[in-house]
Image (cartoon, rainbow, N blue to C red; front, side, top):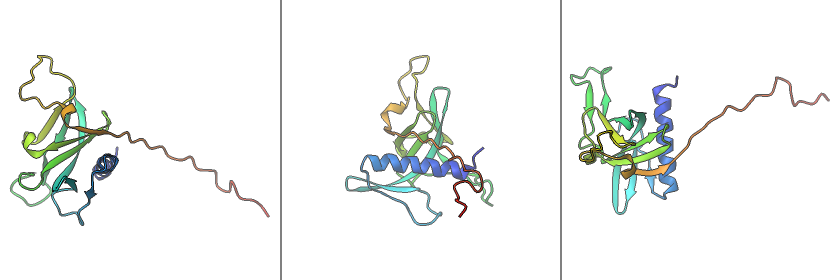
Length: 157
């Protein structure tokens, strides 16, 4: 199982790759103590973006809309992003899609959801469909390169 930091790094890279492919100027803040992961240019405006990993569950891409601070001496273990970011960028490996969601479009409890398949009751009101926020498809696959046996490829001169 991958370390959560490695998963987050892969998500951020997929989002940056999608933004680069769309010619969206992107900056990375210096240090680890900002509440946002990227800054992107949208016209003449700069947007603070928090990158999140989405997971496909029950027909929806689900992602966290808060940070967990249970390991800190903080009276509130969950901290939202209200007033600290402008949008969430979500990468879901199962769908291979990057979504860009303005913070005001997200229910800011602990988890946001973007519907991939229509609900069984065909409800449409107050449903956020993933297709409305899709900005790019990114498929990330990695394979280890086979290593040659020790001493292989050396000439004996």
